Length: 407
Image (cartoon, rainbow, N blue to C red; front, side):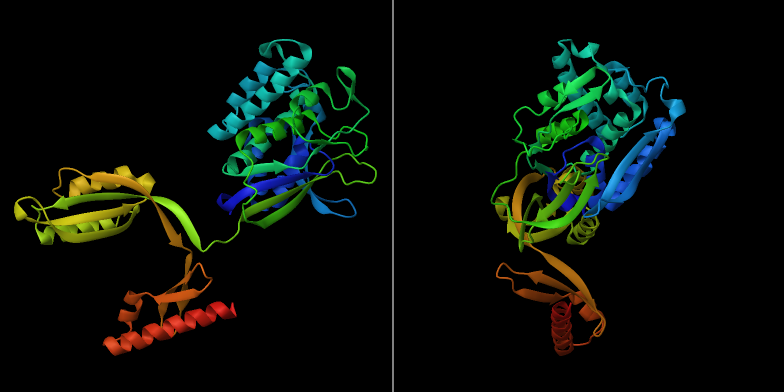
């Protein structure tokens, strides 16, 4: 399902923090959330605390909370504490044996936040020391966020305006205004709404995640036709009057279209010096390659009026090299022509019919008409004679269409 998600929209109702983002994503994609919790618990630093998703209901909405709670006896552990240099965190991330893309996203998130901190304090990036954000739970937040970002790599992200919040917040630097200085830098240029509800509504980790996601994808076209695939709620630990402290996540897929467009490759060449018997064996061997979609052959006239066999092989683009190598091995050709083209194909699905026992392909046409075509190999295996084949074919197709309507 994840590869079908084209857009994710986050409603920042209560605001955004790292744990709220993770909880919202896990609520929307439960299987993925469970997998990521398992991956987090494999990390060497996971022994320093409890990492879990817990169900939560605020009296109106139901969803999840993400908890990364450090054990008290680990709070001053080397490499993970409340005063961590940026370079120390980078070294720690490199030591955790993360997947390459997860490591990349984790490092990018910390680099983005470090740049904001450097601007706040008027220092160079390498001199940045994280305080609250250098703590164990914040590191876990960023790694978990990186896992979700990697899993949803082809997704476009959109957001509601960020709530401004207000008042003051306690920090290791002392009392700071809301939004906190680094947060204010990170959310520059983003849409902001002032609903006059006080408190820290957007944390530095939350602001970093939003800014990073915006850098990864462009806004979707306003003319895109989408359908909602999944909805989830991620709660924070704070409580605000008159409003739920929740991030609502809505995941969209493209609305079902009859015609799909994708790219394929065509490998073509001619043969005039390979026997028909041996060429037939070669074509069968090429056809069995997983990247081959179809093979066409036709007689053509070449130089000096000679008869050639022309082959056209439709191939998935990622399999061009392996199929080319197979063609040069299985046939006597000395060269190949390769082109990449777009194609439009109709959505189809296969259904199994029991009596007569056959597979039937159902296809939706652009005018929403459904047509059916029985697999001739299945029909031939249970019939004798042209008339019987035709009758069984029509019967299987009729049953498949009726089965579709009943479903």
